[in-house]
Image 1 (tube, rainbow, N blue to C red):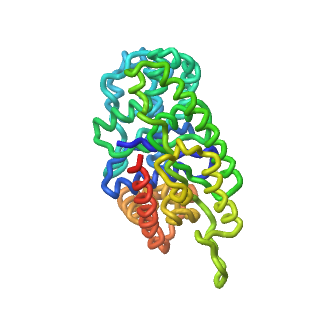
Image 2 (cartoon, rainbow, N blue to C red):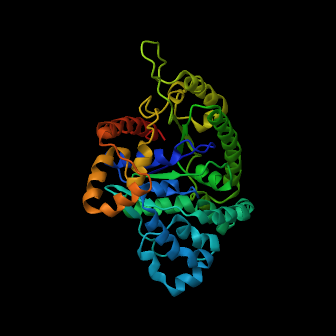
Image 3 (cartoon, rainbow, N blue to C red):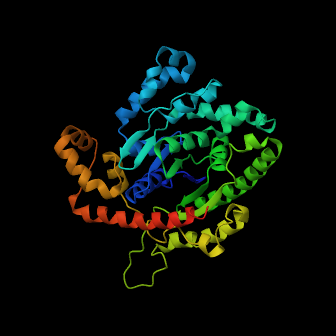
Length: 376
């Protein structure tokens, strides 16, 4: 099992949309996948499930987020249904014993499950910051707080035989993401073709260098038994992809290698040199410069899908399943389709061929990513 995170210091790059579609693509290739939403904005969760169902999960959990031990003593049966990631982390946050039995994950399709996010996750981040210095002294609770996300991924994988755990993150370089990125096996960056993504890559490179120094220092101070709770080696950079870029549309003129609008290509062409300059070799030691300089999947998924992701999100399915899911819902849940329509949802059946074509693009991207993950 490999734990992979999708990360960028720049928001609005389509990170959650990409994570969701990658998870579904892996599942359709026969891999068993768990997605974990560790972005407090919960965009990955909203891609995967209806808001009213998420609201029910959160509402049931509210007393536990305030006082987990008391609420659990009153009603331990809550763990018989899927829970948010903050709920599952809450015993560690409160410094009480871990749950003997983990709540089930939420199944959203064949071979793919999710642990929903929760807006209150900032509380767990605050607790990491509060306990951070204790890691250097080998404090058990501090180490448990920092490693518990990885520990939970491993426990769920042992129970359900996952091949991959995908973790969605916020754009922050704060202590929660420091903990996540430093304790997963690999990560990759979705980038938009603009100046902000270039600076985001620089920031990530600088942060990785500092984080690695901290963790190397921690490893030298703690016992071998406690060291085993961390990854064997520090996180590796898997590469980048361009996402949501404008396609070159003028006919009869020379096009660049990714068929991008020139204004976008000028930024894309700077990404490889920015990566090589800012992400140190120890964080990309499994790849040659040539490999790491090429976007994952080449040009497979780099061009904008316009309104297609919004349509898919409304139907809670990957883009290539829109025609199928729309037909099913129209037959079996017409009230939901009516609700969507009243709130501005539009679906053009003339795009069915384009929707289905997207599956091939994501398959190409996913297969290239798998080659890179296998080098970890």
